[in-house]
Length: 534
Image (cartoon, rainbow, N blue to C red):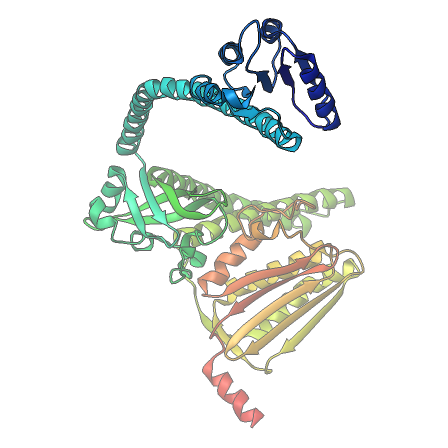
């Protein structure tokens, strides 16, 4: 069905009847026919149409007058004027005055008439759409004008806000007691604040030509070994973490030569939505006072524990005299009580000694006493001391050597014994009854390697990084009743020998603790081994 509302006005009913029939055949059902132009005008005052077809000569008013009124009511409606040949000049005048869409001479061709009606309706719709778009544009123009008038005010307000925020931020940065530094992903310094300039003793311009690695260092072995790494890996900026805390670092003052202990908190600055971290801002905090407080605390603990040794040794010795019958024969109940007291005092003495050893290593006051000694004898001695404890739990305790019979190493014998005893003792303690422990000692290319493995409960991967820290007792799965200093002290001892200690473990399968001492096998033994192999 064709769409379009059509109004036809002609004083002759035969003409309007002909239009009705023709339009119905063409599918136009929304057609309004009037023989009076006055009535047609009244209809149009309350109704809209898409096309008006009007005769030119009518008794009440001619077509030109009628179409003027229609045009005044609906400017976008397409107007078609029916005229005879003699009225062609009037029709042309109507086109100029009224803005006719078309004039059609009588008698008309039906096909041409229908085509003009269809085009006229389409033209009316296009003009209406155009008018709506123009109104929308006018409304948008008004809004744009309003926005433009307020834009300058908004920009001024935002600029003032940004300026105030920038002043506050600049004040915080410039007067902050902590140093603030901005670096790129490779550690190149981009910007610093005055506090950072004072720490380093260089101006901002001089610092921006350097890298972070040139003004900061760490005494921690793992961090020092990474100083040649690229992409800022020395302080972890080469990974995906957005926040990094650096401890045990020092800032070097280029003018005074002072090395200031600091803690540095780095946070990533992302430039896009993909979390691409290409810049990092760091806050450098001077921890000199904190370090001095820690030193005084450690000195106090060391003095206290040292002073405790003498009365503990006296108590232990006295209890041994009692148990040996130095003051007379003891009853079984008395022996049990005294044995329990002796064990408690010996455990306390072990804790005191461990604390003293940790203090000495951390303060640098313990000097290794290196000698050349047969390492096989040392391992066998430790094994023999722990064998009764293993047998008591029904543990299969295996010892294997992959080294020459008389091979010797250069190390501090007492400290290495402490490490071996601690690792093997932990294996016995954490291995279930009727379990199995394997000890392996071998020499390879001048290095000494020791490992002890068990089939115990194993250690969760999340707990492994904390095993060699101070006061780490077992794991989150199972806690130990010890001091939590054994593995920490073992690590200190091995690293003091420039060695490495590590652990491999799987839950419910067991653990393997190992350490490596490089270039400790004595030259004489190496030569003997080469001769025997030849």
